[in-house]
Image 1 (cartoon, rainbow, N blue to C red):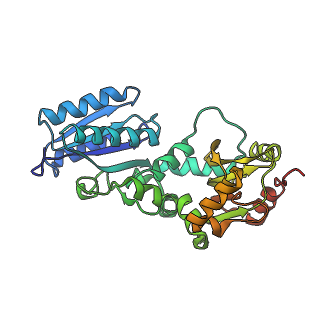
Image 2 (image 1 turned 120 degrees about the horizontal axis):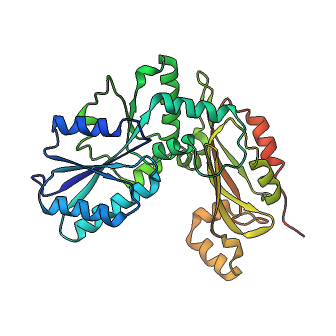
Image 3 (image 1 turned 60 degrees about the vertical axis):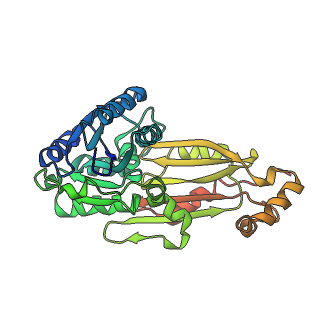
Length: 341
């Protein structure tokens, strides 16, 4: 372990063939973080990863551990698992700190995935697609390493980086030159902060800062916030989702339905994946006494309280390319309903 008694950990994620192993091996050769150990995992057995990290720390085999996640791993699961293992080991007297989450992005594959996603309609799809995985990677990382950049022309590369920046505002981004990366961009960065990564996700920035919608005329990239107090009609929205606008790269936020007025849902789309999950009941569903109590305690709820809809609302963040905003808003508005009498 290092002089400070801590073993530092870096999680490296990316698709198969993106260059994760090459990146790790180059860091090991340069040795800028002392003794570096390389562990590969598919995360199907988190217990084994915990055992491997613990054993390496106990044996004093490494100052820095680079964990390479299998290309099929879910990014959120990978981040949460490695962070949890570091916390458990630290509590057990083996100081371990997650230092960096590196997303290795294959430039030609990512460029093709985003281009394909924009040019085709998106009927329901089983499993996951390349665009979804890249978006997930970018939103949950602290460093992005773009590989095989020489296979794109300057305009294609600049567009890819601009798209990545819109999806993740705060991550450090570096382009490899001949497969070489500056170790200072990867090792001992101190960049990992779970809350900071979540705040940097583009959709979070849009939800929290509705006046900061961006438009990049050069690449046609747009971000905007859709807010309505009326509920969606679930059947109409499902019909729209079957043929979701091909120009939308990412969407996430809160919705509610006229058929189930007490419940809020998280609705999100990344690539060709559209997912809905329950988020809990609105305060509007609580007894009146409880409503008054919480409104007195929480001025932020009072600000959004409506005499008819109370705290119910739709709030969706969108990131798109060459998106016809008027048409998209019109299609969403056509899915709105109202509460039954």
